[in-house]
Length: 333
Image (cartoon, rainbow, N blue to C red; front, side, top):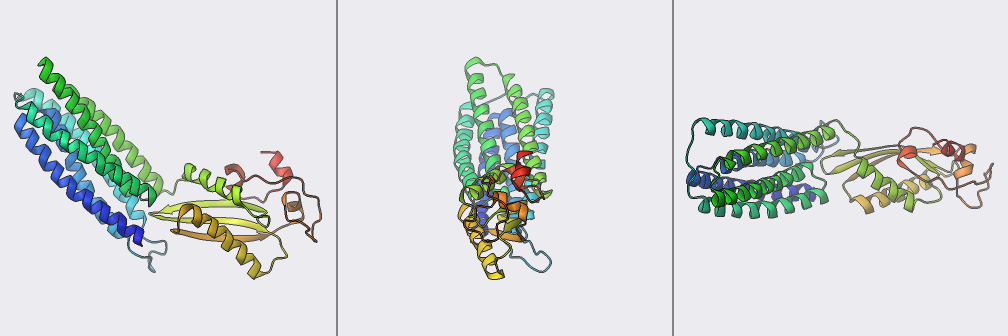
């Protein structure tokens, strides 16, 4: 819950900051009449709108689980990111429209030096805020914060490109470059909007996070205990900042309920040590069968029916499958 509150506070600061930076860019546009600066300002409209949407989404995501939402409200973050990505794409098309309109209704570019100073200041502030946002978002596994941070940094890069182009215009007096810069920026914005939409849809549809799974499997394999004979049917689903983990753990069949529970507690402690305490673990325990002896490293097992052959290395291929394993089945992978 503290993590969710922290996410909300960071997003609140980002939202207020977006309003201030938007105002600065609008002033820069009215001073210069540069369509490139206008494109930067239009993207900031999206920053402001997305900031308020993200703020509301994080407020919802911070709510505790209830009867109607047994897995919590974390999915609200994915919806927020999807809306933000859509708004980014819309801003890209709007910039293209404004560029074409400026070709028809030409306005002379003025006071570029003042406009450049204003947008440079906004770029520096955006980059710092975006870096903080991404850092907190990754640490707290918040897609909404990461989307906001990436959006701010995208805004920074586009502003840098715009400033570079405006400096060239000041030196060369090639004012037509203003339109070219705006079109290039719009294409970059469209691409990044698509990536944010793609990531949010992956979260809504519970798409497997392969990087997370690889890290998960690596840690479990490195620290597994002898009584953890096999692990299979692993599922990891993200709901906002919480990881919901389901798996089947094969342990010696002769352990009593209390001993089996101790093994599950040890597995949970290892996962929390690696991924933080925002974890819900659901483990189905399987008793070992005779064919498990070949991969079982329990020393001096009185119930052993077959000799130990080799340690089973847990990999994505075998840990995600819904089958119990033995040394023979590993040879077929």
